[in-house]
Length: 305
Image (cartoon, rainbow, N blue to C red; front, side, top):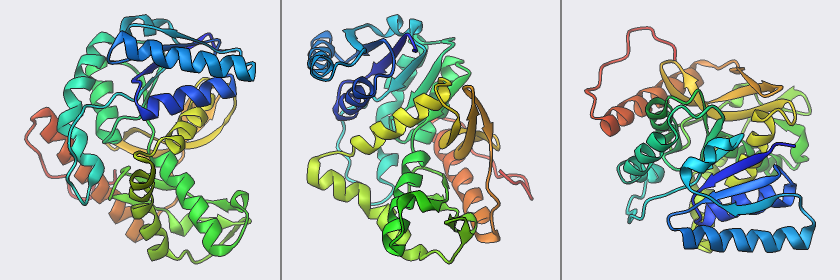
């Protein structure tokens, strides 16, 4: 069993992640770093109650960020307080607000050798920012894995088939530039026409519908974190979609993990999907340049991110 997992952030997502890790019994210890020691202690106590009720082996404890260096993995859920008035590209609204927090955290964890899972939005930008400023080699973003789960769930409902029958990916940005890989999607091993507009409508509206009803999406992201941790820590082998280096930036791509080692496994794309992926790359590249204060440059002709 993995010795310890760390969580940075005690808000709704951090709470959900802590709950799912304790319930699933991942790690012997769960170290929690919050905005204040009081918040971290409160979450640790609440999760300790969950541990007692379920018989979980995971022991929650309060920590400071530097203490997390002893962990096999650190999950970053921290989020700045800001008012989001955007109706489109909603996740991008957090770029400027969350950048100082992530820069500070990257400095405190510089050179950390474990796995970092980024949940903070805009997740593709924040994953790249943390990776480049911390120098950590194993930094992945949760986003496209959740999009893919929602895609499979939606398609199973629309086609009235079991969820396990659907195989497919959503890649690119965790946001408005997500790429639905309809051309390589299969149901029971067979390709079929995907009702793309219905799928895209559901992917676009589902997060807002959840947030308006319960305040924030949290359990879906927590499930994606659990799946990614099991793979990244070598507890099991398999596939998931994570934000990772690709084409000179960070994009959501399918990764195959074998004994904790990731290997990119891009699906075949049709012409429309390839154009969409390039557009996602350009969008994220330009947005990252704004975050870093770097002048943007056009992509070379014929580049294939």
